Length: 428
Image (tube, rainbow, N blue to C red; front, side, top):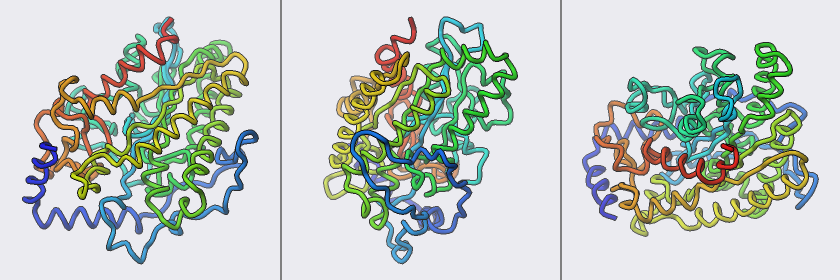
């Protein structure tokens, strides 16, 4: 509560010009940016699952149909279009760190960031500028939504592979670099194709297409036998879904929430997850981690909208996260029984992050209700830039770097927890 009060004092001194700039960005991101997202191919991973709860998918709606354009000037912080990051990465086996085996193909959501492929596409959702990356190697902003490294980087290092995982669309890297770890993720995407259209980012199904091309390039580089071994022994990290709820379902009243109950939408997303990982399995993937949702009601932006309750976490969102996580746990059990030779694990970020937020001093943090960048309430992407003089000096005191994503210190703790927990069996 004290950290929230300090940031409210900072916000009172916000220049009028900056208020105008922030409002303009929010409206532009919702209504004027052209969509660059391609249509899904026939093997659309948004198809409903063949088993379990059967739901009839409503007719597809374009993103413009989901946005209440007549009310855009009245959008509140709760209606912000800024999404959480999704990450999808490939990492190779620890026992073969001298050979070409991918350490982590990664697919991750907020607030877990990743090396973003958004640098290579036309979207407003980018972070390849200062102060992002100020604590990264050489102080370089790479597109990671943090002040430094992110969980997949730390996981790769813990597996004895390399200290950073490159983005697949980064032109400075080649298949030689990708052979030991690569990220296919796109900030702002989700399981649902409609989610990726909000800010014109790469849809989930497209990342699978990139992975198929990666396999072709890997076979050309290593030969079929070696490449198949890499694909089979690689660790696949998938963590996605926060955007589907906060930047889609709960954001547009005439969108998915008018088509699905929250229970039905969760089943819809689980069906997409099931289809996606089943396709990944058919392509040779065997070691797959499916990450749950974080306590998304405790993200700084969500707390800022809850000012009538003193900036506390929005428990409604946290409850949805916990419900969805239980469904993912069930999915992991189902997949392990049905897909022969597979090893699926569930990685839970919820408990650890919630404990950090409730007991920050235990982890050496001071501020949890607000982020380091800017006022700490709503800045992310272009709002978190060098022109914002409110950014904190020491990010290690904060759980969150911007209003959606953790600091490097938080990322390191989360990665260590995963390596010693759900991913430990893959270190053997």
